Length: 243
Image 1: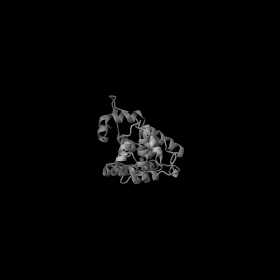
Image 2 (image 1 turned 120 degrees about the vertical axis):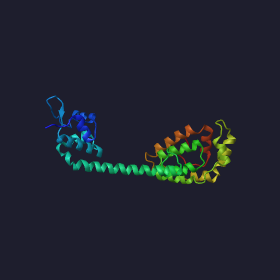
Image 3 (image 1 turned 180 degrees about the horizontal axis):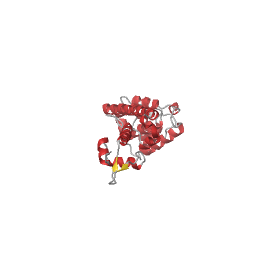
Image 4 (image 1 turned 90 degrees about the horizontal axis):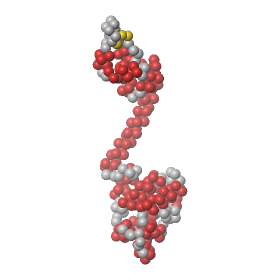
């Protein structure tokens, strides 16, 4: 009986010569008998085997997984059920990703903040330093605390006093610092933000209160100059985030 050559088998199975040879190399496909001229002669059982391997890999099983199935690869129910569960998890994750993408695109919100607060923080007229500080907040506070923080920013605008603070030089004199602290402390937009940070806000911090305070202190020192930090300390703030 005249069988198929390697090329003919590959064409019939809808794959490539390289794939057939690889199946041989990894032990998934038995070597066929050879003709008198030395060329391989594949039969129907080889075609069935190649199609089975090809179908299982198309479904998502790896070649090592198929090798482990042995003779059970005709209908590997357990392996397919496990694969189905993995695919269900992947689909769920992709659906969450799509939902986040739609939210980001709809709100034109930044990608470095959680979707639940990104829109509100993006809408607030924050300085670059304040916005970067919000990113750090999102990494150390509980999600509920961040939601409260983002809500406190509703209507936040660049009041002249805040603009002066944003541009305050590091060597600002004592009088300027005290005046600015008093003026900022009287602003409703600032008071709303400060009210979000009572002592208990750190209780639910994922990595603990001490970790959150240290991280925020480091961020304050990096994002604001000494005069700005001094003004923040002078405002009537809760203890723990004085930098």
